[in-house]
Amino acid sequence: MNTIRKLMIAGAVAAATAFTGATAFAQAEPPPSRLNVVDRLVAAGGFDTLLAAATAAGWADRLAGVPPYDRTQYTVLAPTDEAFAALGADLDALLLPENRLALQEVLKLHIFPRQWRYSNLESNYNEPMNFDMGFQTQHQEDVIGPRPIAIDTPDMRASNGVIHVIPQVLTP
Image 1 (cartoon, rainbow, N blue to C red):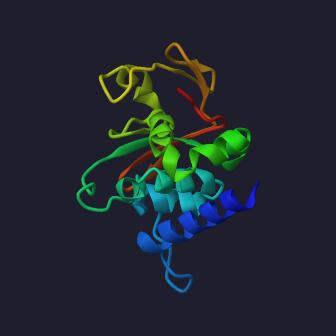
Image 2 (image 1 turned 30 degrees about the horizontal axis):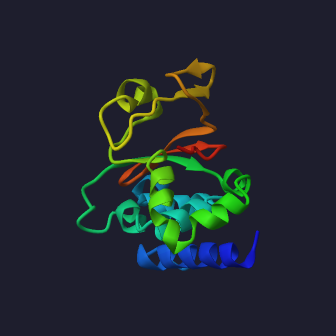
Image 3 (image 1 turned 120 degrees about the vertical axis):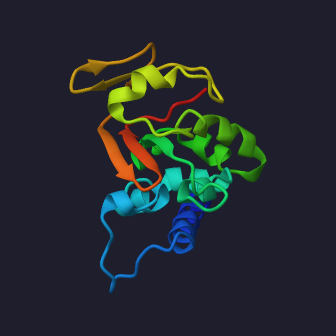
């Protein structure tokens, strides 16, 4: 991982943690379902690159539930840091400010302004949204839709949505 990417990821995680009011070590941690999407990803660990991408795209406030986005529920197909690392130099390019629109196009395949639990992804994914790509999931031998996507961990609940951990980055 090059120095620029490391700095962007470290800065994004630090900003997201400070901005969303992550609890101090001396305080009792709230249950995971009481954390917003950003805090839930930070607490789970392994999603620093996704958080850096959301910050670079200007979407961290949305996922943190900052007004005017405090009433929006989200579904996040969350690629792990390992999945982002597989992009290599492409990731470095996407995180540059001049590629913000391209980064947003990638994130539109991962972040949806509705809460869809694993059990209802098939019927809801094809609703009109900002995109028209379908997919299929593979978890516990389930298969949904036309595009294969493995879901490693479904239904990680957050106060403002649900997160499904996936092992790959979806690209347009």
